[in-house]
Length: 367
Picture 1 (cartoon, helix red, strand yellow):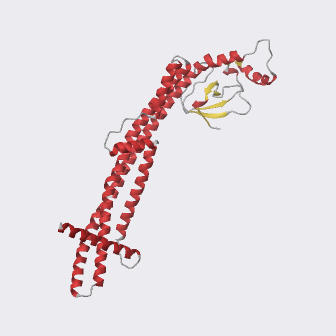
Picture 2 (spheres, helix red, strand yellow):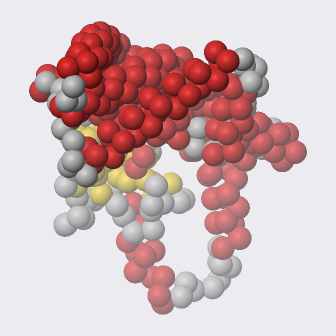
Picture 3 (cartoon, helix red, strand yellow):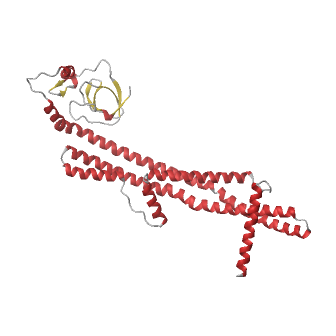
């Protein structure tokens, strides 16, 4: 019991001495042992590494999981050392809703068929997103988090010890200056040598830890490459899935719309044979009728307008559905223009003597 009281009194005395030394340094009433420039650079580099690692970690977590509630839930599971439950992505959920809607609307109907195609693509996108999140969490987030919760905590602890050793050293220097009697000077010199030895030892330990920041940068560089590769793979998958979907929708568009919506709309909108068209529609009919037969475009009879033609680059291959369309090959250049009354999703395309309708979504207009 006596030992504990003495130790407590000794610790309190040391704490008080350090507090006095620190206060006097801040007030400019005491000298402070300065670290060398290289050591100060190491400290500054370590602080910068810690601050930016925290910011990059937090923002990457937001990128991978925008829902703050979900991030809090994952954090709690991690702290409790429990397995984080598998979470369905928004893309997978949307795909599921579209597929279920198709069964109610009729899977054989044009709308139902399209819902199924788009829904399956959304599911693929969701699965790709889940794989990307999982890969990034393991290969990128975990190393950053391990540094902050492991190496950086050790560095911070040793820096605090070094700060205390430095305060003890400077307090001993101040006592030596104030000592007058020979015995007091001898005791102060002994305390100073002990404090200097402890300070030098702690400074070397801290220096070695700070120099390890270079290895941390190398490790984080490797993790950054893996994160970028995972992200590139994810976006490449998404792009390919959407290209495939676009081809499916493009190939089925010519089959779906004329046979269902367009035909019915034309039948409903057609005036009686004995009726004359309104005066406002005559210019439009005159512009379209020379190039159509029974409402079907005759590409050979289409004349390009005097102005309004543009060059376009083909983005993807496209197989013509019938003789009114123009087949396309990726990366080729064609001339395109529009005619009055045309569907805005289509243009007239020309390649040499070949001519036909082309889907706008397969083109990049250049001029």
